[in-house]
Length: 243
Image (cartoon, rainbow, N blue to C red; front, side, top):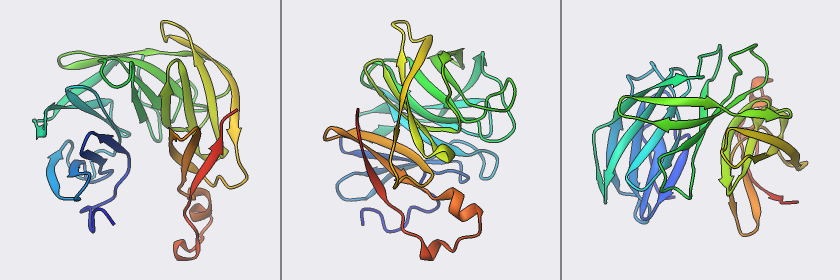
């Protein structure tokens, strides 16, 4: 056990050097821990408790960016070594529109984590309420322009995302699969080239690539939604083979 009590839900995670960044969901917090000892480094209040849902986080060279699934806001937290600065709310502009349900969810950085461009997954498609949307994000001083990525293929219930080169893996939670999206050179369009599936997937919400495979975390929301007792369920990390 790295952290005995996180002070609330631990949702998205990002590991950067010896620091672990934790999105705090309905607490509105971004918590930072020493990744070796579990010591708390900082607790940054991004939104008022209950007013937002801090869902995922990615760390670039000089900042952490966190998503809010309830509001059209992206949060930037400046970083200088192990020093954590004051949060900067960035209004999502351009093509981004709020939809009923969960909105901004998974987030990735373009260029291996050192670039300022980001890719954002929106769980609910704002155009008709079905499917999901993906955006290329250009963060500015007080706002972040969102350019919707035109996708040829079906992406639904988008949750966590993983970017490797120009291949974007999109975890589709209630679909129990991961969409493989090949992005164009300018990242403004993409094609679904296939799906990763496994019989052991049970509402996966996020994933990472390591050791030649994709590892997805089962949240079992579908089982819980049908009234299953969480104490009787197994919660797994599933190794999914890459094609």
